[in-house]
Image (cartoon, rainbow, N blue to C red; front, side, top):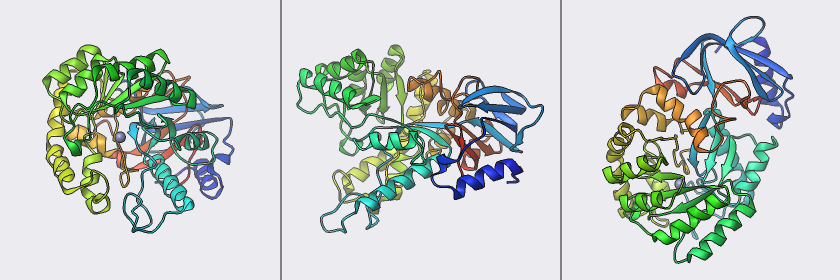
Length: 405
Ligand SMILES: [Zn+2]
């Protein structure tokens, strides 16, 4: 890409400077692009400019006057993935999981692997992720926020709440403990893994306790649920968002629609990535031949389930459930959505303004509009027509700073 002088200087400085975020951006920058997609309307604006001043977007409108010309690109809000596992990575033996017979991973190797995941995700245009999640996320979230680590803004559950045999009182206590620890969201489970058949694994009372207490604490609760019984149980419990739903049927879709809950079906990346990397996962936990057989059977059913949910009018923010091997490929979720029947522009909205709304951040993220946070990307081509344009990210501004490669 031809880059204007000022922009190349910024990028060059970012590329050599360490840490990247130490780069002092000018107080005000105006970018002009051939096309601008604002993240919320289907309208593609031609020859528009976006001004960022002191950490906020202050202008979006027709380009006139001085501007950094980004050229023949589409400028748009940074993408959001509402379901990742950013810390999952392959170990020094190239495989997933610390095997007793394998080489021990050092803390430095682990830190480097996670830093690489964060950077790959950001450079793929994803400027925010909801990580669902582990204790270590608190440090990552802080390091990204203060510029020590290059990565997407992190929203985290700081762990996963498996109801198991816990009583409702114990579960409510666990939700309060997560809140105290600084969780942004509660991640819980209503069914087993797809590798175990995805069947309902909790009682209504247990889920009522988790989602009810989350609501009382001002937190969202997102629920891993595959089969219809688990989805309906989560909807009845007043949970905020259903994850996966790989076995959702008409009854489950109708229940989600009636309750107005968000549905995050992961149809484009997670299972495909497991299958592509089978040799690196197999042999740990439920990553068995039988588990892989369940996943292989599920893949071709996901598109039709997504289409049914789309036709029913469900609100479906984009989430991938990205695990080891998948980081930086998050946009594949959007490609598969479009193959399954979603309009490219709606797939883009699902990864910008709708995803932000699902995170409760719709007033600050996911749009190019005055007052919004400057998480901005540019891609070659026009993703509102050809979604695969998301493969060619040419520019990334994260939290108001241009990120170099
Ligand atoms: Zn997950």
